[in-house]
Amino acid sequence: MIKTIKELRDHGILPTAQRLAVAEYILHSEAHPTADQVWERVRVTSPTLSRATVYNTLNLFVNKGLIQRQVLREGTVVFDGMNDAHHHFIDEETGQIFDIPWDAIEVKTNGNLGEYDIHAYQVVMRGRRKKKTS
Image 1 (cartoon, one colour):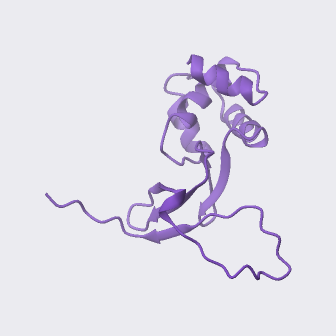
Image 2 (tube, rainbow, N blue to C red):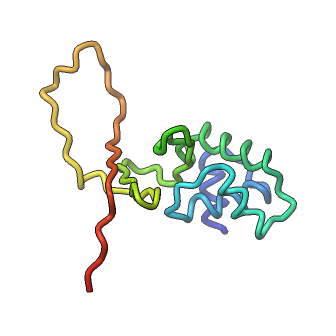
C-alpha cells in the first residue's frame, strides 16, 4: 500500500481511501479491465464504493498519466496499469489481453510517412494463444 500511495503522490493525486482501492487493483494486476470490471472487483473490499467514483477515479488516473485508456476490443474501453512502452496480444478465443514487451516486436519504416508526425505507436496483435504442451 505504501508503494501505491507513493505512485499516486508522484502523479499529483491525493491518495484517498477510494483512490487507493482502485489503484491497488489496477496498478498491481496484469488484467486490462473495463471500468465496470474494476468496480465489480474493488467493491468486494470496498462495498460502499460507487460506480461513479470508480469511473471518475479511472479518468483522473488517465488524465494524470498514471494509467492508460485503450480501445483494444472493438467498442470497449479498457484500462492498462502498465505505463512502460509495450504492445498487446488479444486472444480471439478468450478475449484475454496480454502485454507484449516492447523489444519483442520490430517495426520498420523507410522514414517516409508524409504528412504524419508520429509521437507514439503500439502494435495490437490478434490470434489464438498456443496451448502449452506437457
